[in-house]
Structure formats: structure tokens, C-alpha cells
Length: 177
Image (cartoon, rainbow, N blue to C red; front, side, top):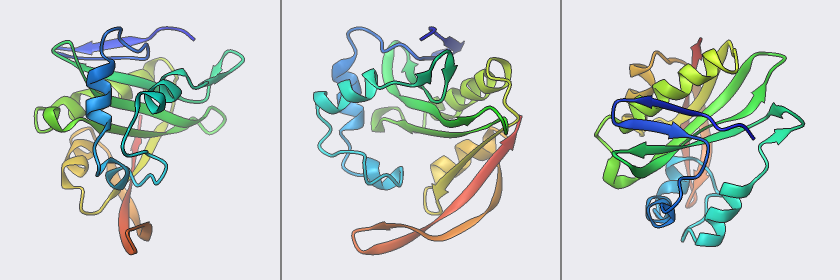
């Protein structure tokens, strides 16, 4: 896989796992609420080194075509989270975007700048026309990150995610590139 790296001041996103940052990755991912915030039952807790290695080493391309790409978010040379494109659909020129930022790096502009860099990559390298995502209606910080980067709310998916026997709704967002 090709190496991609983009920078914006103190923020860098890179698709190559940075050597020497496994402990930071595990600390950030080992958040008991991460699966809830990401609406992903498959996000493990506790998050082990085995989980991290499976994520880092998973296949993200078929032939010479990416179907998924994950970037490690670096803030002041520390691993602060992950942002990625999945379900890359070249025929319809769109992809799903998702991200997480470790607790220690929230409210510092890390997610907002990382999203801006991923948008730049989507537009310039992949030549996509649009990005889309969903976010829990109660995840205000993520909603702000999305709207600050030009995403608009397309609608609401009512009772989309079931967690601990309670249903939660999500907003659907998109961005035309």
C-alpha cells in the first residue's frame, strides 16, 4: 500500500502506523465508551494489543484499488486517534468517513483538523464527490467537528443503535467535495 501523509500545523495524518506509538494507541482505544460513541458493537473493550495488531494489519485494498484507508492522527508527535474512509465507492464517487480521538486530545481542535486533512485527501487523491457519516444525536462535539468542516445534516435515523437495552437515534451527515 502506498504511504500517505498530510499535515496541518501540529496535526498530521498518516496511513502508516508510527513506530513506537503502540502504548499511546492502546491507551486511546481502550475507552469503555468508544463502541457506544462509534455506534460499533464490534469495537472491543478492553482493547488489547492483539486487537490493535489486527486493525493495523488488516487488508484495505484489492489489486491497486483502496476500498478502505485508515489514518493515524498525530498531535505534537503523539498518537491521538484514528480517522478513516471505508466503503470507498469509486463508481458513485463517495465514501463513509469515521474517526475517534483519544480522551486526552479532545477539545483541542485535533478532530476538526484531522477531518479537514481527510477531506483534502478524499478530494485531491481519491477524486471523490462526497463523504457521509452518522453520529449519535447526543454526540455534540462530533456534530460540531462535522459542521465546522462543512458537513450538512441530511436527516435522522431514529432508533438506529441499540446499546444496553436502550435505543439511540443518529444524525446522517454528508459533504459534497
